Structures are given as structure tokens and as C-alpha cells.
View 1 (cartoon, rainbow, N blue to C red):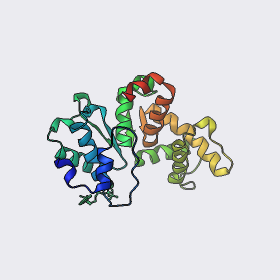
View 2: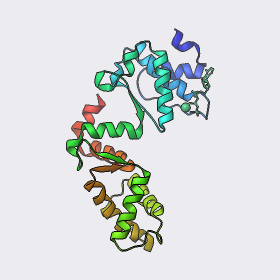
View 3: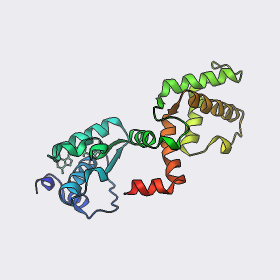
View 4: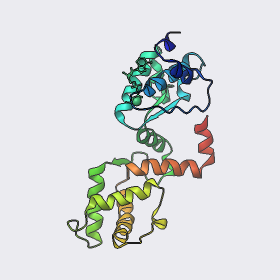
Length: 215
Ligand SMILES: Nc1ncnc2c1ncn2[C@@H]1O[C@H](COP(=O)(O)OP(=O)(O)OP(=O)(O)O)[C@@H](O)[C@H]1O
Ligand SMILES: [Mg+2]
């Protein structure tokens, strides 16, 4: 089969193993992305998996584009990469796929379906605004540093109520965190960290949702 020709024996094993959990550990540039692209194509071609039942996540946009390009080359079924609504593979970055999930399930969120996504510069603007509102000088307290602390907390799923302020700086961050979240909501906005945080939260709190996406 042509799909397997340009793979070494370990890659071939990872690509052809029956559907189920497989963990591939390999160094930089060793052919991981090639394995993933071939695996997707093999699942569709050989195991008859519906493209829409496949989700592939990458960390960077660049990697997502690369993967999409490779899968498209391998599958002559060009429609396998159509948006999932039309039956294609869900392929994208963690943030992009979470954003898509949140728009679809926006009834469960404090923002509407048309929420905007605040990038780093928007995030810093909000932090500066929050600092001013609590009478702190953004020139004395670096907004980037405050936001870094908020971002780390969100990535550890630490919400405001659980945010421990054991230093003066952390106390500032806690107060900014509170105002920052309010400001996001009043802009109908989520920041990058919220995309992941809310996706985890929805799946944790709504078993029916989890079951739906497991299918
Ligand atoms: N079995 C193979 N035979 C020949 N070339 C290969 C093979 N596997 C991968 N390559 C080539 O090696 C290069 C690196 O492969 P790939 O991008 O899949 O690696 P990676 O582990 O994903 O790399 P990175 O760590 O940069 O993400 C690519 O040009 C790819 O086409
Ligand atoms: Mg890669």
C-alpha cells in the first residue's frame, strides 16, 4: 500500500496499529508529524473511520497547516479536510479547536456565541486598565508580569476564589485578576487561556457533553 511505503518500520507500526491509544515518543525531526498524517490517512483508508470522527491537535498554527497539507496529499478524498460540519477531520491548534467547541456550546458560557478572542496586546491593555482602576501605576507595576501570573493561574485552572496571594505582588495580581475577568466579560471576550480553561470546565461539568464529543 502506497501509504506505508515511505515509512520506516517503527513509523509503520505506529501508523497501522488497531485504533486505540498509542503513545509515540521520538526526538525532534525524527518523523512524528509524518506518522500522525499517515495515521489519519490510514484510519480513513484502511479502517474506514469517518473523517469527522477524527480530531488532530497541534500546538502551533504552523504545525496545523503542515499537518493539513500532508493529510490532504495522502488522501485523495479532498473532502476529508472540509470543516467538520461537512464531515471533515477536526484539525487545528488546541486553541482553535477549543474556540470552535466554545462557539458551538456557547449557551453554557457567560459570553455569547460571537465572543471575541483577546490577543496578548488586548490582554495587556485590559491589565493596564485594571491597574489604573485599583489606583496602581502601570509604569510601576509591569502589566506583562501581572498578566503572566494571571495566565499561569488560569493554566493551572486556579480561579479567582482559589488564587492565593502570599506576596504583595501576588495580592496585586489577585485584584487585577478579578477586575480583568470582569472587563473581559463586559467586552464579550475570552483570552487565550480562557479558551482552554473553559473547554476543560465544560467537559468536567457536563457529562452529556463529554459523551457527545467522545462519539
Ligand atoms: N521514513 C522517512 N523516510 C524519509 N524521510 C522521512 C521519513 N520520516 C520523516 N521524513 C522526513 O523527515 C523530515 C522530518 O519529519 P517530520 O516533520 O515528520 O518530523 P517531526 O518529528 O514531526 O519533526 P519536528 O520535531 O520538527 O516536529 C521531513 O522532511 C519528513 O518528510
Ligand atoms: Mg512535527
